[in-house]
Length: 224
Image (cartoon, rainbow, N blue to C red):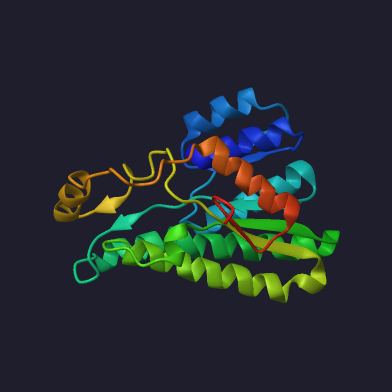
């Protein structure tokens, strides 16, 4: 859904054979019918075995993996002193550990085939310090460090690792985020005047594809 679906659509439009990986079977099945040559695999990015299965089935189907786009993620809002440690661990598993496992699974494949591209969806919150977003931002700070370190480590193997950093985007991300009642009421009551206009998921998909095509280390939502 959201950025992931928009990216899959745009890549398919450009002729890519797209593997669709998510937890929602109905959404996957419907999208698979729409995108020629696509392949849907039910995947839970918080489950290491599920991620490994996704990679195995992709290789069985297509014989190679040219590009991995890690986009699954969830937000968590709350003051640092109040963030639930259990919820934070779950978010970290999805936003960081799942991405790392997927990278570790595809890197040997890409090395063997002579190269590849990995794009990890980060966030502009990893470049700032916003109240109530410390826990979520920390997962993206960690993702940036892993991604850009891997970029240096894998240069010799012709494997390009990039991060794409969306800003405010028109998706259900906020609705599905974990937040305390106190923070929820504070954020809902906040005056949105002066806040930047949200980007469409289709626009962010174009920026992800720019990361794939350009090979730049970091692609922001908007050029500065």
